[in-house]
Length: 82
Image (tube, rainbow, N blue to C red; front, side):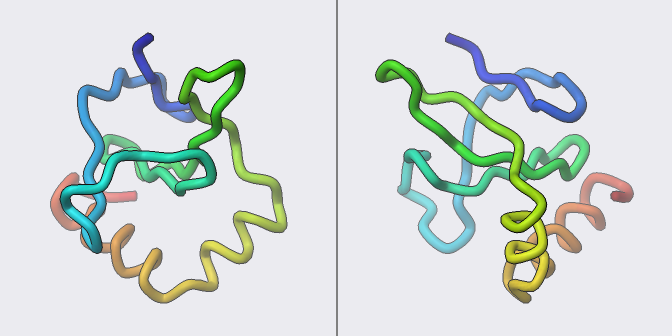
């Protein structure tokens, strides 16, 4: 199964965790699209890893995390904007 960003539709060909480069995505992990910066949550449904949109409360909590904001800012520098 191919994973696609829920915000811009781009197909993901890999995942990378800046704080744990050898990690693989798991249920409940946050995902930021390198292409558009959209945030999603990894989720497992019927044994298959996919994405879901964050709830409003999850989004607020995530954006209050300085590390997440730093990662998104660095992504924006490299990718050319938010």
